Image 1 (cartoon, rainbow, N blue to C red):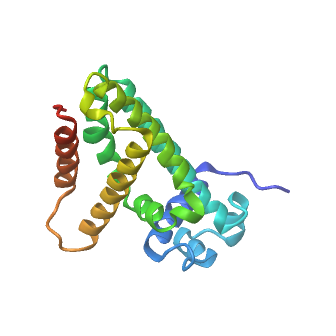
Image 2: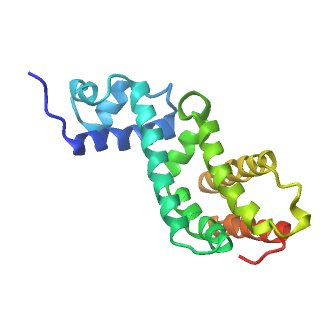
Length: 195
């Protein structure tokens, strides 16, 4: 007889696994570790996920979908392109930075499990559209093509994630607000705008 699935158990498996993968790494975490952390029988783990790989894919994809939906909500609540860009920096980015475990997974397991290139492409298209609209009447921005924006997004986004991870794991006296203010000021200076 097939077991009924309980969303609370599934969520517990995902949250516990995310924490373990973040702390120990994917390859150093076993199903036995997940069983111990969740206090669920091994059969329960396999009821929800056929493999450890599938647990990782679910963590990343569901985490990404949640973040992306919040990004769309943040942007859609703003009227001007400048205010959309400002909201991304001041409201959305701090939300991403709260999930340290997901940050660690994105940075350490990005190639194998996250399809990070697809996610960067989606984000860069959104940011490119905003910047293109902001800069359309300014000849200074002819160099802002898609590739430039994609490169900038990769450097800034992954750099910010790494910087936040470093500040949380060490005694470096830089706060998340310092990092976000640096990003905001860099964008304002490079585009000669006020956000």
